[in-house]
Length: 174
Image: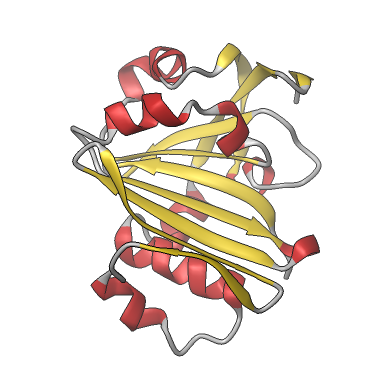
């Protein structure tokens, strides 16, 4: 399966104020929709905007444009108090990667594109060794996300709040 999504997982429960979190992250024009969506819908290429849910103490934001919508400096400020895992999966370009932030800074970034490692910053994390034998790059990143944050099965069983968002690319609607 080829993925076309990105996600930001924050090790803090923001369920009481998801719109406030999005504002803190610099996401412009985030409007909560009435309907909830599945993880599959939140990570679908067909859908713009963000799917947001809290799973096992992690606030999880997924969508095709997650990393474009979130302000990097705002995320660094949040990572002073909560660990942050970001994942990128883009099957059309063969790209898969992650970033781990803690203590207010990025401590590990890694990206592979069409079999070539294009970003390799910071000391490899112990969890990376646990998934090193997986040959499929997207699957390896999903396994790493699971080792560091939330079990994939839990994500797939969760209903996400759907948010419309504005960006420099224009309105993003569900």
